[in-house]
Image 1: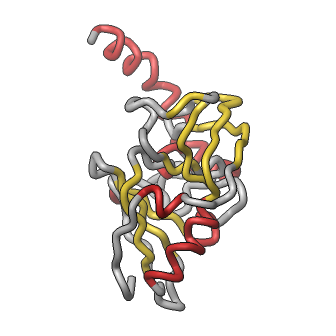
Image 2: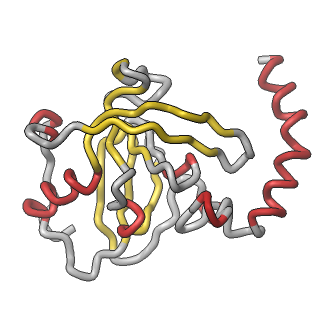
Length: 176
C-alpha cells in the first residue's frame, strides 16, 4: 500500500449496499457446509472505498487478508473482487459468532475455506503473491472448481490422501 491507513468499522461499511447470498464453504480436507446464507457487503465495494484512501500501486495484483487471530490468506485480486466475495457480518440471519469469525469474515465461495479469513482486521494490496498462514502448502488461487487444494499435490491426489486420513482425524477430535 502506498498510503497505509486505519478506518473505523462504521466508517468502512457506512452507506455500502447490503447483500445476502447463499453459498457453500468447501474445505481442502474434503468436507463442505452447503447452503450457508451470508449477509454483509461486497468486498469489491469495500475495496473501491479503501482504494480512494490508500491509493494501491497500479500493479497490485494480490490482496492479503489478515484476521485478529493472526491467520492470513493471500487472494488474487481478480478472485477477491468477484461478485460473490463478501465481508460478512451475519450467517443465517444472525450476527456472526466468535466461532464463525465475528465481527467480520471474508467469504470467498469459489475458493477453499482457507481463503475465507475469520475475524478480518486488515487488507493489504500486494504486488506479488505471499503465502499466508498455510505456508508453502496453500495454493495461490485455491479455486474449488479446479481442485486447487495445495501446491504440493494435484487436487485428486490431495483428496484421496484426506479421504484416507479423515477417519483417524475425526476419532481424535471426538476424543478431545
